[in-house]
Length: 239
Image 1 (cartoon, helix red, strand yellow):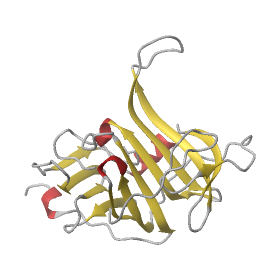
Image 2 (cartoon, helix red, strand yellow):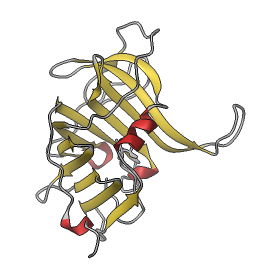
Image 3 (cartoon, helix red, strand yellow):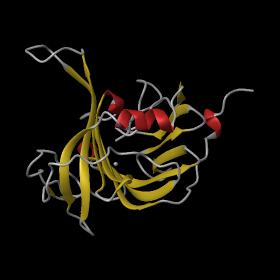
């Protein structure tokens, strides 16, 4: 989910909140041999001892990376960037020449989402959720459940730790109760560095614009040096 959280109007294609996927056809999906999780980055397999639980994911204050945003049911894949600087961070998928174009930001203790383009969308306001920052995001990751060590089969293969986060309503004890998965996410971080994010699946109401309610981000690069974060003029508060 990353940080992508949406209102029904004005939010983009996300632990995010949430977070959480467009230039060519989608990458092939292979079922996870152990977890049952499909991955557009190639087969996901367990290879290592899962008895020891590593520390949960933690997004760093400074980073920069490039990859793809994949919306499989729409047959859309667009370029994707994810950058952080001094605790602020920004996701950008697509651009004016692509069928999908949006940006999500954590900027000065506020979560912003601005969708410039999305199939069937006619309204494009900038949504704001105050009181949300990098620490709040990482606190959410503290409750993630460790699925296990896995390998993402791509170029190159990547050894990762697979985590799952989610919000299920209502909050009831174990037993035969109706439950609704409000938001779910699968996060794959480097086995040697929980602050290096290689892949995220976002599923739930934060993906309202997508008919199947799920989207992928897949990183090709992820560097621990400051990126560029810029709040769009449309999201700036009125003076």
